[in-house]
Length: 298
Length: 328
Image 1 (cartoon, rainbow over the protein chains, first blue to last red):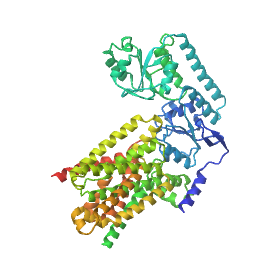
Image 2 (spheres, each protein chain N blue to C red; image 1 turned 135 degrees about the horizontal axis):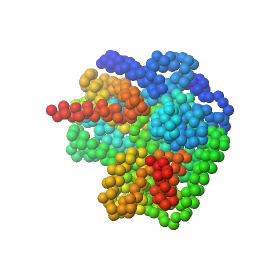
Image 3 (cartoon, each protein chain N blue to C red; image 1 turned 45 degrees about the horizontal axis):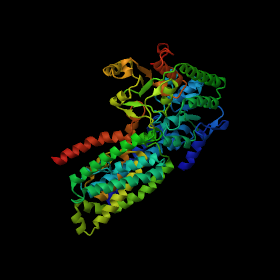
Image 4 (cartoon, rainbow over the protein chains, first blue to last red; image 1 turned 90 degrees about the horizontal axis):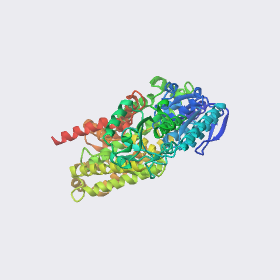
């Protein structure tokens, strides 16, 4: 009886509209509506991408920390991207969920699909993949010209930085600290690691670990020329940390007053804003090429 | 006797059913009991709400019931065999061993059932062997020694878990962290039913052996003199309990102190007879866990907190209280 009720309910919930088969960037085939109208973005960067494509009218839900742009704050929240609220997702009657591979827990993703909601996964692990992800989501949502304009803009901004950086011969040694505490940095095989290289720096973190934790002593021995902290922390917190480092004049970055704060949302999120992050890092590593004051980095 | 068991069981079953109804009525999208009852009786009136109730809330509540029953029963079994009111799968480190197994399973990319359930079981058995080894040489029944071994095994398990978390590639890490936080929403009705089918025989077995639990809790010697094959019975009980606990841990993560609170509550109300305590803990434990899950869903203003936080917040102070009282 329960099963029968379930199937009646199930079929009546499922939206009746034309559908198409697409392959998402992770290689999965997904049956999606031709024109998705009720989308839930299961990570903050996806919310940003959908907004950047001008398709925000299709969004009916987003995750808790989707704080950009301002319009995203008004969207109903479906939990954090790691702790998704299944019930709220279903209650919003989405016809498509867009999530991140390796971000949204697989057990919940399976449940979402079981409930008959198409799940489209993206996997932007490097900057080119971010551009491709924007293209893929643009195509998925039939964003037309908006997609090509945005993708071209992103490409141009990357190329501009490449050209700028090519002008400089120096490749300062950079320590990028993700967050205030603990001192976590990014290895070469990460998006943040790639940003350092693109921005014309040499990542002092080598090795295969993706996000290793460092002690102050280890950072001192790495002797970075530039020290960048990406965080959501306010200026005051950053100033305190800067003061703390000032007693270590042996470190080149301290001696030359090359400690910077960059808004972590610009460097962590695989969205079009990543290019702002790239520009901020470039300005921090090569102040002679770009002026950080003209960018909005904090 | 049978009459007493039946009456108590029926009362507790009623309590369990009531909490289950409350459990399926409370959720992030709607909390109106009457509307939920209406949606169950007339699914066509509100297809969305009835889908939510049947497909999301019901399996979740069912898993909470299973977890609560298993962990409470696990508490009763350990407490009587070890003759220690503070023994419990979580405190002894059985859950911790299961957790290591489960995390290894998740790292290997196995499915929650049977894959992770199996690796969790292997982990819990290793823990069990380790605890028993640490406490032999003296007596299996020596209270403080066993408890201390359990605490040590637990500390070791926590260290291994932290180690596994620290070396895991971030892709799988999200799944582990999610699992560690404990969640009942990862299961569908079919999986919950399979889990129930795997666990009900364990309940029956332990219930059938409940009179031996009575004898064991009086002491090994008196049990032996009554003709009980103590070693075999103890082994069967411990392995069965570890099996159930592992399946639950594999699905829901670590939920501490449930096996302490419920058996204690039942024992003070119903007396020490295990023929009553076993069914009472199965039913009462289920109701208690659903209740904790409701709190976890409703207390935070935004989102949810892990149910394990609620069970520990209630259980840990109680543990300290018992410890203090048993010393004085």
